[in-house]
Image 1 (cartoon, rainbow, N blue to C red):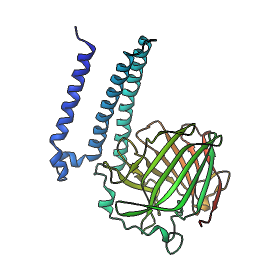
Image 2 (image 1 turned 90 degrees about the vertical axis):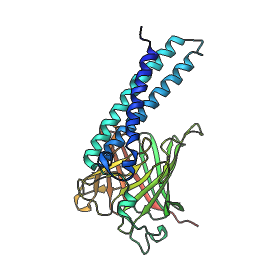
Image 3 (image 1 turned 30 degrees about the horizontal axis):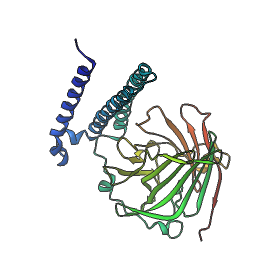
Image 4 (image 1 turned 90 degrees about the horizontal axis):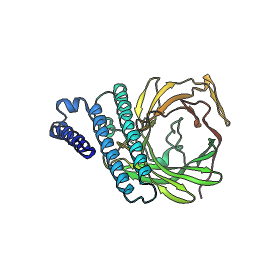
Length: 328
């Protein structure tokens, strides 16, 4: 009689065999030759899918192992572990399809924007002085945006701090989420502006708190580490239908954005977008959460004024204040 462990062992063997087939072609990929180089985006999606499958199985067997030590309700523990396995296994497939859809939009070329585009970056201290800031995200020290929505207050501030990543001096921007006066998230993002005025995203350290205790840094990433690469946060001269990666840390941070309009009309608590304002509307999402996407509205000279849940427009995060503080 075939046992459950035999089925799982067979499945793992098949997955390992498929993975090894990919490893055999690694030299061709390194040289930029062969079918893997020609289909880099799709191969990346497939590799992430295999990684997801392994992670799901790892979590399942750890959960099942813990169930053997559950002396109160072992049967319920096993059932919950199995249900969680089935649910998360399906998520791997959803992520694969979302990554493949993104490949159709972006193309199959390897993603390596710094080496491909070779952008030159400005000194962040010059932005707002001798260098014009990007109108959709002005990286001027002291600029501060306050948003509310979903019972949360979100404060974003351009600090006077910098961090060097991949030889680029990035500006540190803080993003603090509060609920009922208590900090639930505290993030430091690292951005840089190039000579053309595009704002690049080089990573973040994201901290999540529960009752004042740090519980997670999931989603944190740094360009140049473990294959992570920067992307555009916003372009200086966007065009309708532009689509680009905003960040790339496979499995951890894979946000993308697509420009929908450059004369969008919307209202937030602090300000309003009219056609003549040349406001930009984007749709933004990530293959990691394929069912979640947002419409975002950017007003020149101000920046992001509104986020709207694409699936539920009643869920809105609106700009309620925008001002400048003076650093000592």
